[in-house]
Image 1 (cartoon, rainbow, N blue to C red):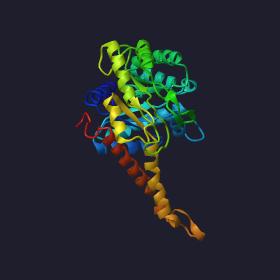
Image 2 (tube, rainbow, N blue to C red):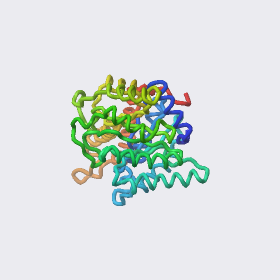
Image 3 (cartoon, rainbow, N blue to C red):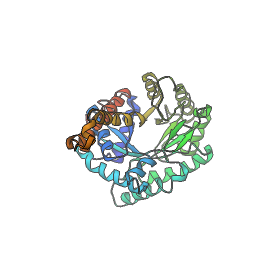
Image 4 (cartoon, rainbow, N blue to C red):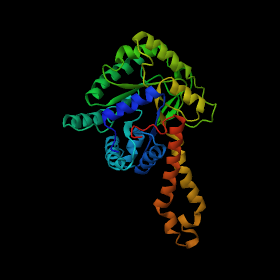
Amino acid sequence: MPIATPEVYAEMLDKAKQNRFAYPAINVSSSQTLIAAIRGFAEAGSDGIVQVSTGGADYLSGSTVKNMVTGSVALAAYAHEVAKNYPVNIALHTDHCPKDKLDGFVRPLLAISAERVARGENPLFQSHMWDGSAVPLAENLEIAKELLAQTAAAKIVLEIEVGVVGGEEDGVANEINEKLYTTVEDGLATVEALGTGDNGRYLTALTFGNVHGVYKPGAVKLRPEILAEIQDAVGAKVGKERPFDLVFHGGSGSTLEEIRAAVDNGVIKMNVDTDTQYAFTRPAAGHMFANYDGVLKVDGEVGNKKAYDPRAWGKAAEEGMAKRVAEACEDLRSTGTSLNA
């Protein structure tokens, strides 16, 4: 299928909310990890979201070029072409963008999509994230309000973060403390500033102890009941059940019970990065160890071209990551839910 149109993306999100499942949002940093993600969704019979971070976009432009817009546009162009060969809908998203990178990442991409929409085309990306977790809430929401007007005009969904995700991602680090828990007051301030969809659709990453990075199960103290408290309080205020379309960040190491509880409370998108990075790299490492004297020219020998051909280990890496994506679909109950099913 082609990359999801704004209308198809809206239908995807609505279906997830109504049926209490969530889409894995898979971070990619190359054409091969992109293919692995789409393959995983297709094998699970699930629509899905593929996303690129500021660091991933830098890398995609060339490790010596480091141009986030170039990398993002190149990824999107490639995705729009290869996605046609898979029977599921794929939405493209840009991940965490802090304040100091808005002018070099999200705003230029928004301008490109605005120009495309003005020509009668679809936007390049279906959603963008503004990560205002590092600035005061009032400033976070003020910038979000400005961006929401622009994303709505370009038929794009905005993602925001209210609260702080601990750990480190793309050079942004936060301590693991009480700031990791969004409050009811934060939720009320959010709808006061942005509305409940009437000013443009947005996704909200409320934090309930989330931490980026690698942790063993039980090491991260998640409190998904916080999501229910905020949904109930804000819902009572605005007269709408589960008013927020929620995003789950920093899910590595979470138990299945915690993941399912978050989904039951309105999570419709869950970011998956650390686990899929490992799932891609582990088979490649296995290939190198198993074919040591083939991938290296040991003791003056010539090695084995079939072993060091990047396609040899690349196929294994793609398969490993695709399986992990399909596993994420199962955890989030999106398996078999494609709009095309």
